[in-house]
Length: 261
Image (tube, rainbow, N blue to C red):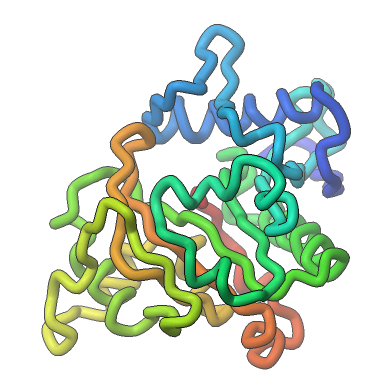
């Protein structure tokens, strides 16, 4: 953890400097830590960026106890509302999943992406504060359905067969809100009766488990992203169902760990 007691705040990126700080953190996590190599990566400037960035809101978590302004950004979320997507390049997830059911739902949509937290801040309060900022954004814009790509590290299907099969059998989204992978990788790799559910959940990334506890569901099929060295699933969260199940859907107890979304 940071040497000084963290002094957290969250806000949307306000200028190019904020955006570059967010992209620098993304570089550290997605490129240096996880081995991603998308065409938008700027290795010289140490930025992970792409053509979608200008259309998104970038929610940033700052620790004001850090001296360097660029290093104060210790958590990020990339956010795109449905009304903005329709006037721009569309949703990033649309490059991996057929989002037709979500678009046809008539609900107010929010795509979540590029979520990560600085390694020094995982396992503590950072994700709680970042999710509080997200909750405020959702309330402000009256979002009804959140969705986005969530990832397993690596591209070897057999290593996550238990987890993917468990997601398919236990957490499949209702048909009217169920995206389908465009390069379809089946998730029902193991029959439901043969799944070791304890091991399946143990091998499921922490952020995905947090969303599942909040009532999250998954789309049909996975997508193997070789650029980012991940196996992706589409997570869907209906805020109406979330609010029914949890009075405080972003409670501290639900978000003690953080991996990448």
